[in-house]
Length: 140
Image (cartoon, rainbow, N blue to C red):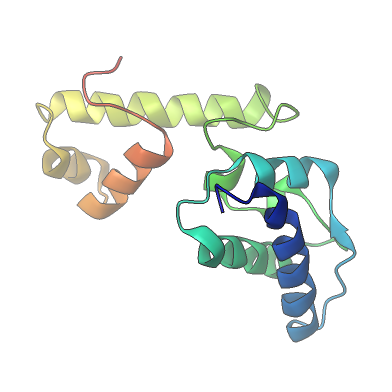
């Protein structure tokens, strides 16, 4: 999907309508900000990740339009953040998460297993969080 970015919104709309019918919930489309978030995400999981993100948005959303708040955190907080959401609450939460993870890694001497134990997370979840936050060990 990284090579065919023009297909992202078409596929998202298709998935939204399909999952909306299945959930018996009419979906009119995506807000401008949600579209921007979808286009800015790298989609490492490709089409399946997009479908899962849209299905989640349909199930968790409360309006006929899919909003950025309905999308998974990884989509909204990707490297090239949505300009409309930069700063404010999401930025503060992301920064707090980074500091907590970095502190735990430092306390564990760089050991992901030790840091995961400190944070009471499964090591796989810690690795995923580090990847999502775009952290590198030793960064501070």
